[in-house]
Length: 134
Image (tube, rainbow, N blue to C red; front, side, top):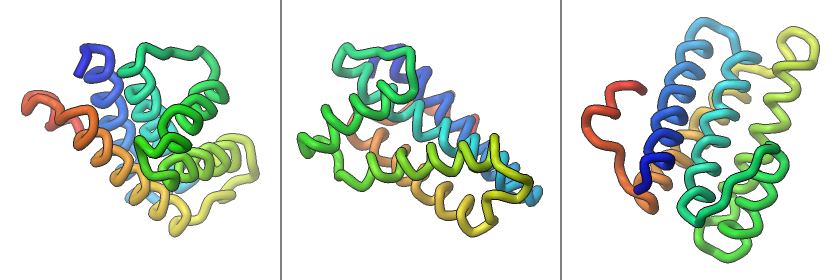
C-alpha cells in the first residue's frame, strides 16, 4: 500500500464514520453525501495503486469501472454502488429537503462498508494507529 492509498483509505474510513453519525442524527441527506465520498476515496485508492489519478469525479468513476469492474479485478456491483451513491449524493446535496430516506442512506452505508472491506482485502489493511478514526 502506498502512502497516498493509505491516506485515501483513512479519509474513506473517516467519511464513513461521519455518515453513520449523521444517519444516527436523522440527517440522511447529509449522510448520503459523506457515504458517497467514502466510496469515492476507495475508488481513488484503487486507481492510485495502478498509477492513475484524475481531477474529475466522473473520470474517477469511469476509470474505476473500466480498469477494475470490467476487468474483473473487483466485482462489478462495486461500480454500481459507486454510481448509485453518486446519484443519492446529488439528491441529498441539491434536491429538496429529505430527498434521501433513512433506508436509502442505511443501504448506502452497508455498501460503503463492503467497499472499504474489499479495499482492505485487495490493497491492504490500515495500520492499527489508523483504525481508530472510523
